Length: 321
Image (cartoon, rainbow, N blue to C red; front, side, top):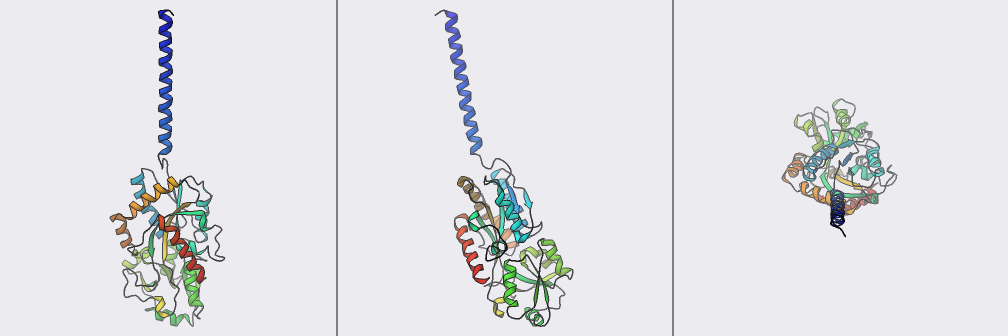
C-alpha cells in the first residue's frame, strides 16, 4: 500500500466515524425530543361559556401548569348539552396527551339514567378533583323572598322560575325533589354562566341555583343573596344560612370540578400531568383560590383517588334520579 493510498483510507475511516457519531447524536436528540412532554400546547377544553366557575378554574390551573411544564394550555370554551358538547370534543380528539378538559358534577349527572350523555365514565382518566362547593339558592337582593321558608310558602301556590345549569344536571335532580312535594318550580336552563346570573338580576327568573364562589362579585356588591344551601354542613362563608335538608329535602349534591383526559393516553403522560396538577393544588396560591371561591378547604382529591370519587358520586346521583 502506497503512502497516498494509506492516507485516503485513514480519511475514509475518519469520515465514517464522523457520520456514525452524527447519527448517534441525532438519534439521542430525537429520543430526548420524544421524551419531553408536553412539547407543544395542550388544549384545555371547558364545556361551558366564558366567565363561569369551570372557566375560571381552567384559566387558573392552566397558568400554573404553564409555569411548571413550560408549555401553554390554551382554554377552548365549548358550551352546550349540560357540558356534553365539550366532552364530545375532548373524547373525539386523539388520545395523545394534548387535550384535557373540565368535568363538573352536573355533566357527570347526565351519565345517570337517560340524562343525555353519549359517553361512559371509563372513557376518561381523571387527573384530580380540584374544587368542591355546595350549591345554593340565590335571589336578587331586593327579592320579595326574605327567607327560604318564604320561597317554599309561595311555591305552593305560584310557579317559581328557576335558573339552572341544564337538564339532566344535579340542579334538576335537587329541584325535582321539591316539585315532588308539591312545590311549583319551572326550571329554565342557561348554558352560558353570564346569562344564568343575569336572569335573576333582569327578572327573567325568580331564583338561581349556583355556587357562591361563582357569583361572589354579585354577593359582595349586594346584588344577590343566598336563601339556602344544598349541603350536609354549613356552607363556607355562610354558616347562618339554612340548609335545604332541614326543610325535608334530603338530596344534596355538592358541585365539583375535575380535570380529565381521554382514556388510552400514555400512562407516562398521565403521570406527568397528574404530578403537576398535584403540585399546583397543594400550593398556597391554590389554597387561597379555594378560600376566595368559598369552596371546601379539603376540596382537592389526587389522581390516585379521583376515579373512585367519580364512581361514588355517579352512584349517589343514580340512586336519586
